[in-house]
Image (cartoon, rainbow, N blue to C red):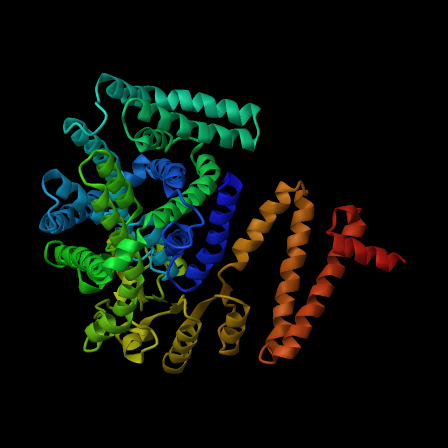
Length: 606
């Protein structure tokens, strides 16, 4: 099969199946694996030599390690040190012991059992993080801690691969390591940053974007070659280079240059793994292999759940999803399994079984999430009462802030500067916990409940500031305060124009749109960057703001009639275009207008 036909088969299978699997909620990794299985020798045999593809695709893992190294800024790693090295090492140790015991029960003995235990402990970063992002939970506490554990695994891969090589060399199954390897590592650590900085400065100063990308690829390819030539892993030198450049001025540009190659090659790596899956083996013992994959998922999830619940004292709502997210097998499992095979620590037959099992964990993982969401969570929370609201013990303050998110916190900081006492309440327990970690006083409570408003002694307040994210909850709160505490002035933030008009209809004077002032200020910077004079900018923005406020007054009368509101908005756009066009013509700037406005001017002139 020619190189072109191989490339066409790989790309065609990826383009057809990966979007489909993402659409089904199974993730892109699963799509790549299934695509590889289908075009591999065990299925349709479009490609007969997956080993050749795998050798090329493993460079995707190498590039992944370079990007991981770039992410390891000293300050960031120090800030995450407890969750990375604390939780990460706990997960690695506990799961490795349990899974090594499982390997031992299948007659994989000694050091090989430990290596297999470590390999099965690894979780796919490419699988877990997109899943958390799709669920909208990557910024939750368990999402952040899951990322920390994954980061620890990524960091641990380098020494583990090196140890596998050393053990294999000692056993006579690998390359003998010696002074050349040590000298190569020391040289990269000492000379890497200054040499690479000079190269990238030269590439960025005298070359184009393509030359900079070529320099980035040269770094990864060159260091991978250097490490392999002295008997070390390809990932070691590349990872070290990434770490050395993490705090450099080229970090973001390097990520942007490398990431497209890394993503594509990593997808190709998963396809190559799929091609390597022995379907005949799966046909011979389907129940045994699926059962083993399910057992590994349960053991990983159960072990870490117990660790989180009984050692770190985490709540079930934190420990359970985190244990599930880390239960799936990972790309580094394949890397370690192949490294162990090359070092003669496990047999090719054991490699085949382990590869199939790790792939099956990726098939079963989405089903485990569905079971958790549809069965476990409703069952465990059916009798669970919501956390009681905090008892508000403030004597009564002149300002009450309902909703202590982005806007509420800024108002609170300003009041603190002026030594003005205030009472802050928020209905999100996660937000309350987050704010309290930084030493701020805040009460957990729902401002749509009249009893909470009374507990907050709203009748003694001078101002009630509504900064609640949820539009309906903010409107309910405003109504309650106006009805039961009419002497208290209500100030409110509006998320958008519709929200603003609803607040005005309730009688709130001058609600503040949260993005309007910032957008106008950013527009000012854009016009300055385009070379506009201060006088032109001031006139343009003043005209825009005045027109927008006048437009709001007109929209207020018809905002509940959608057809009239749309017609009025179109009319207002035409009016604003006319005003700006006339100003431009008066200043002799018509040649700087957008094409559609220039066309309008020509139409008027003719």
